[in-house]
Amino acid sequence: MIKRALLSIPSLLAVLPGRAMAQEARIDLSNSGDTAWIMAAAGLVLLLALPGIALYNFGSVGRRNGLSVVIQSFALAAVVTVLWGIVGYTLAFGDITGGWIGGGNAWMLIELGNVRGGTDMPESAFALFQIVVAALAPALMVGAWAERARFGWVMTFGALWTLIVQAPITHWIWGGGWLSRNLGVLDWAGGLVIFTSAGVSALVVAAILGRRSSFSGMPPIPHNPALSLVGAAMAWVGALGLSGGWAVAANDDAAAAMISAHLAIAVAIVTWAGIERLASGRIKALGLGKAAMAGIATIAPAAGYISPGASILFGMLGAGAGYLASHVVRARFQVDDALDVFAVPGLCGALGSLLLGAFLSNTFGGVGYYGDMSMISQTIAQSSALAVVVFWSAMATAIVALMASLVFPMRVSEDAERAGLDASSHGHFPEGPER
Image 1: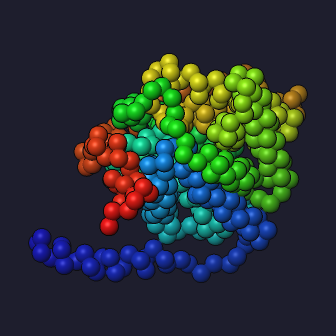
Image 2: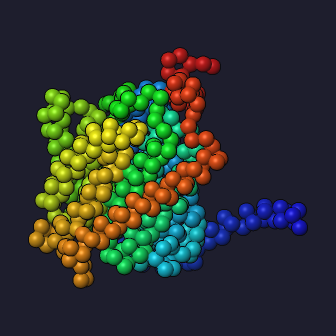
Image 3: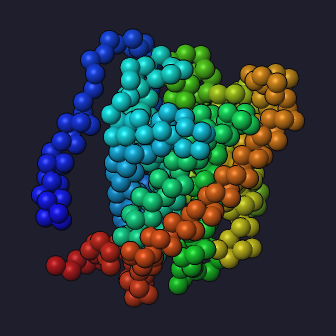
């Protein structure tokens, strides 16, 4: 029987690709403009994650570890893309089966149908955008465990995390699940789904992983601040695609969301620079990069719901909160979140989600409340969702991190850490190659 089962595997593998690619003949009922825009937005979001965040991380770590964070981001994007193509997309956006997880109708993207419900575009274009968005959160988390995490563990953890932590949260809020359907929770472009979940998970991993041997309560000494700032600039460009793409149409909603995002990021940079100049007498490249990340995360949950004027306030508050948290969290709690993933995008995403409850109001130029929601009920809904996302991200991440450690040890050896991961894990010797 075992022999027969083994012999059947090649036949199964031969059938699967054809089954996965099989699609019924369809009449194109979609809007070509909306479809073109969502595909372009997907490319901009990929620019945000790769090379934007990858370059930001590269320049922000020590010179012996820059390549390692880029390799991790690059490989994680590939792993997450494959897993979401196979099962992640259907878990997040498949048929609603009770509000907790999506149905299996879109497994391996088999039965996407013609037009995605609630949109004017083919579901294939919608799925492309969502698969790219899914790669963003793992790219953010790489900065938390920089300079000490083992590559094999990172890949295993990322694969488990995207399916166990990320896909359910995505379904609860974006896929018609219980948080959006029952509580009326709103999250335009990922304040909760992406930035809060990634920030909390990054903090948990950093705490379990332990501090770098060189930890002194400070971030790593950056080896190339200019490239870090270039990466942040690419992330700024990509963030316009993230905010505009979530309109799921090429219309005024997309343009308004992009204006709000652009303003919030710019204001966050100006505000952070002002605070830094007053506090230290200097304006630093890494500070401006963190400011951009703070603006991106703070405006993400609200970009399409609030007025451009309100987005200016979001940028100011996000910069202030991010600056304070980046100087307090590591020193106060002694958790080595190397590049402040929790303190900046994590906390700023949570802040924007809470502010949305008030600034959705027509009084402040927002789009107004849906159904019987009010400022109080919307704020309660946003606060409840934040608590749920924080709890699930923390608990499930701890379990996933320990599960992955059963396959690969979490940390490299002390000798490998001292030598730098570029050399010890990836064979890159910038100080003189060993052939």
